[in-house]
Image (cartoon, rainbow, N blue to C red):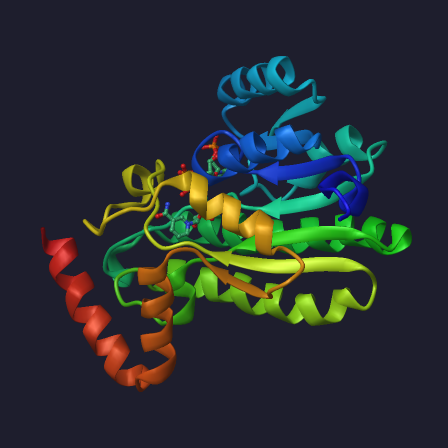
Length: 260
Ligand SMILES: NC(=O)c1ccc[n+]([C@@H]2O[C@H](COP(=O)([O-])OP(=O)(O)OC[C@H]3O[C@@H](n4cnc5c(N)ncnc54)[C@H](OP(=O)(O)O)[C@@H]3O)[C@@H](O)[C@H]2O)c1
């Protein structure tokens, strides 16, 4: 069987590498001999992880502090990555905004769209072009189980995750003819810093390790990867029940949550 490195080359770019799911992707790619470009705003966090992975697995790392909500983030990234053959792109950075939409901060909602949707679009277009020339590569989009259903009081976040789900699944078909594997990972509640930043939901959370392990295992086999049986059940309900009923159900749960 081809190794990860033989299949995708020796460099991966992971956004949101400073914590949670992104940091775990780095931890699981390094033992496979994959060198890492780590992108997020918190430089020290990434440098610490990069140092650990270099010492333990002998991989090369490049830490790029960048704010993906900024229009010109690519001007920071491009000079740093232009000489590298990036064979794996993990579009992971993201956050959410919980609460009543009309009370929300418009600037922050737009920032979220930039990080969750605009950045993956730009990175996939630019790095995908390089993969196309080499006729090999892998791209993982991180959506959410909430990408499968419109979610009142988390409306823009769920819509941003539906964007990743649709985009990634469409590109799975489009790019597989060019040797590029694309999959969408949709986590349910996972133990990361997400709930601190985006508001918790009190649901049992999965550990981050199996969520990432399944994504790397299924990349290239499945367009859509949902980690955890309970999350797969949730997605199944979203598909089986009329959307309106699911939206009302989820809306009533979310409404109670934001009151608490
Ligand atoms: N945890 C869950 O329950 C859950 C469930 C479903 C989907 N997800 C998705 O999983 C992905 C990873 O989230 P997580 O759970 O690992 O949460 P996390 O621990 O809060 O990590 C989020 C990452 O995104 C980065 N990020 C946020 N804003 C950024 C910006 N403006 N520019 C650059 N990087 C930015 C953060 O880095 P800096 O702060 O250092 O910039 C951090 O590394 C997200 O797309 C999220 O929507 C999470």
